[in-house]
Length: 292
Length: 273
Image 1 (cartoon, helix red, strand yellow):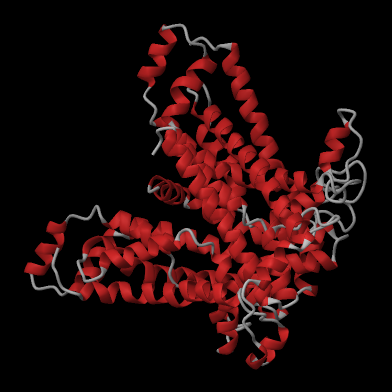
Image 2 (image 1 turned 90 degrees about the vertical axis):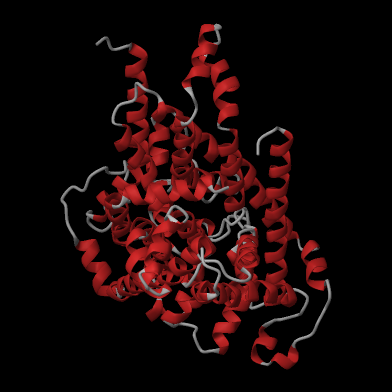
């Protein structure tokens, strides 16, 4: 390597773009969250005032925020693990030696990941239709009465979870397949000789070996799932009875529908804090378990 | 060779799963070729009684779909070019060139990974509004210029280029820019295909930012147009499925054609940790 500063010229354009269009706005959002930036300030900045923590305090007193938070947490803690379990299950299936047409199956399982979210959310909206939807038709074959998936407050979020699991499990599946391929078969064979059954071998040999991948996947998945927005926007518009309003959905409505940018920025930072907390807890937990 | 019954069961299970996973996409395609209103009957039909393209005609003639298709294609291509230009130069320099502040800059970028993009969206919108960039292609492209993810991906790949190769070129009197364009770029081709593919798909599928910045119906991208149209045309499932097919098909074909590069990028970004 040569020690001149020509490299700075190579890095500068990208670095400046990221500072101006990412760091700058993120910092500005923090400042705006302490102001009463609204539609009047949008028209004339003279109407802008610092209000300290008022936005945050008011947010904590807004019932819709708690609703949005609990909806989001439900999605993260029910949808996230379900999606990862589906990924791991599919990876184990495709990793077994007896499986045929592995590449074709992998491509099919992965295809939903690259499809456009808005388009496939729309497909599911019709598949979940109470009267003409295929899911209820299939369930009726098992004697299950029609469910108003997207119209019943009880079912709307589970329906979105169903869609997101379908859409996303292929991504983590590919990571798990790669991890499983790196697990040495020696240990598993030794355990087999010692009389361990398949479940015991999975629990005591395979699972610890792919621990780091599971940690990485769970951090990526959980932080990703906090950002639920387009699915409720397309499928339910936050309804029914606000059961699918998420934190990000609330930020969008506050910010770009009502132009309460001060409020919306406070929502954004609360979301950020939750995601950060999540990552820290998982990393701490993992290092305690000896995974790094 | 003896076939074990549990192996048959395993493959049958995978087969059924594959059918379930593929079903929504198959159904989308099938309904898009049905006559208006045909999908809204009971029991729900699997295949069109008579294959027809009326839903597509309706979609293109009444909703200005050509415009949205053009916007989506144009933005995805521009985003790809921007991302390749900015991220490849930066990623290479972080891997192979020494300069003042390299570590500090790299650590700064690392910190950016934990901040979700949505946090800065409101101020970014205000910034672009000040410069009159709302409802412009430039405004929609701003988040795609450079990305920490892209820089990391290129950096990781570029680290495998041997230093001796660069030294030899310098001995021959090549300057740094010549080395980059003549020597490095050809060597980085595989990672450039991967990054280009990720960017193209990312821009094509993006929803929240275009929804915010493209407020005029003339500047909608396909996903935004689809979301807006679906609110007006709830009953027209055939037409909406035709729109979904047009939105999904290009990226699905692109992915299948370049699958190898896509998977490599996915795995490279996941082992980095």
